[in-house]
Image: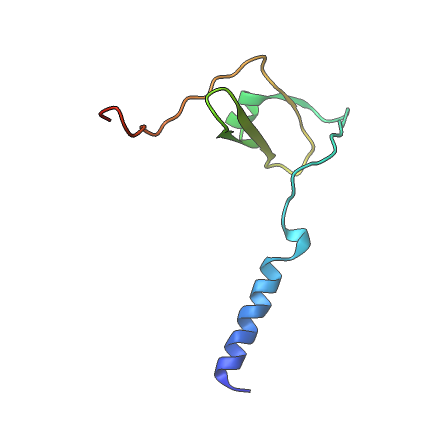
Length: 96
């Protein structure tokens, strides 16, 4: 076996290990409530690094909020009645 083919073999092996089906986490498609899990308020849980929050704005009025549990235990997230997201990057145009 040549060095080149051995190198490609290792690359393909590592690529296969990285892309294992069980290695990725997928979004929850069916909602389930664990009644025994503690209820954690949204912003307090983020401050305690129990979960991570990402906001993907769709337009000026809608956004997707993605909450990712960073612990091994189940958590119930208590959402606030209202929240406001503010962009942090400057906008182009209008003299900016």
